[in-house]
Image 1 (cartoon, rainbow, N blue to C red):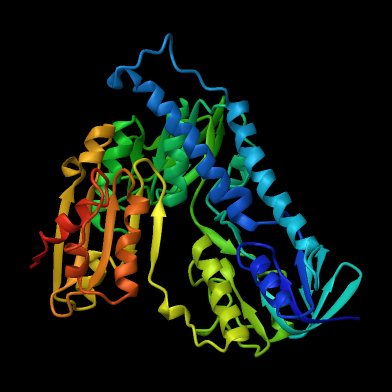
Image 2: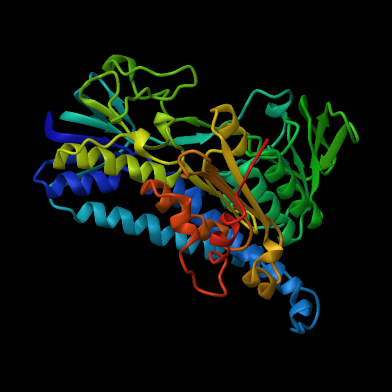
Length: 458
């Protein structure tokens, strides 16, 4: 039996950095990976999708070239094999580089294969059995494929299998109107596909405020994407030349015929084949590993980090999980998940930067809310770039004068929102940000101006 101070299962965003940190402190570490190094982010999440988004942005810009006084001879043409090749090269550089780095670390041994917990200290992988003082689970998640009627009768795509597409679907039907579905829908529309997005709820990205959802819908529809909402019953069947999607909708035709279907209806954790019950690790009703504020599971020596614990589901939250665990173990810190302020992006174009609570949540929590809203048409940088869609929306508490949250939808929003999160972590009054001087012409320079417009809401 191989003895280790720490066994890490999964080489996603938290595991490799934790392995390096513990090894540098003198611990002997085993890290187990059954697939590709880097997890979802590197292989079929952030890295490849944002690379594809970049190609789609260039395609859209080329289509609009005449607006900027740039003449392009002939129509814009897509070479999807080259688009995929560019994406593949960046992904390969990341995952092979990560694997090589891990294998080079002193005090770290890499194992390949399926891991299974025999108890809270013992793991089998292949023909070997490992024993560790502590176990760390960074096993991530995978696309959900719900048991919709007829789904077993059709070929369908997920965000993972989309990574193998090197052609242009004639008509892509995206089932799911949230973050993954909208990003793929817009990029393939810009590549030249006809795109229909089918959402079971009454609006897109239902966790956002209605005004944000409505603005996102307007952006997508302006590019020729068909949006079908309130599609509460979705069923599939094969059809000549593709797939027929039957809908139970309040508006529109009761069916949509397309050549390809992308299922973008959520994710599930990779926790069903780990032997967690043998280790005394409890799961919630959705299969996520239950953790406390320091990411300890119900088994004292076992921790869960990243998507599998249901406490973030983003690359940046997974990495923050590593930081919490590492600092607490090695530096005697008292860091907690609850110290984290929610922040994330929706990477359509223009992007949405989201921070803290929504207006709906702030009202429900009983805050005396101050609200400021400014259209991106007021932002000089947006006008100069010819990208004026969207708006800034910032919330503050009337009593404490602290920022509660923000939704910035527009050019540069995914970067501009960070100046507000720093103020929130510093527990600063919004007036500190309001009175600051910013570079002109930038998107961020309008944040102080927006804050000066904060007003009570009914």
